[in-house]
Length: 189
Image 1 (cartoon, one colour):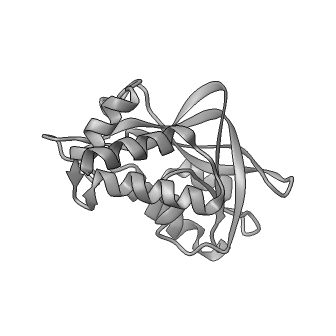
Image 2 (cartoon, rainbow, N blue to C red):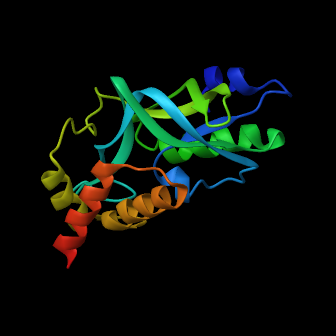
């Protein structure tokens, strides 16, 4: 676990909030006691990271979502709060899950909740210097990769489909993911 991150949340009365924008929306892996729509400014959600573990292999990498720093952009997602007594356990779990290859940078930033609050949340942001960073791929390139990749936890297309389904359930529009999901479904028949 990252000691600098733990220092931000270790006080007994401090809540741990996690900004969910991808698989954490439909598979958080920890008990959530509060979930609120939120917006993170200065970042965008994109399929910009090669997956060589969960949704692909080293020989046939898939793609997973990551937050990319982008001035003028925003990412809509959910703020997830765990029980205060579970903070250390949740941070340890997320560290192991999200930093399997250190392609993400574990950090904090302010998010704006739909109820008007602004708070500090834990984020996983792509490291653009890491070999798993893809840079900008066209939707066609993404569809080709996602439709053919499979990793330890299943097909890459399932990851995309579950994310789009959950975003739709939450009323969060993401036209790029909708278009991408349509392209992948067409490729898979």
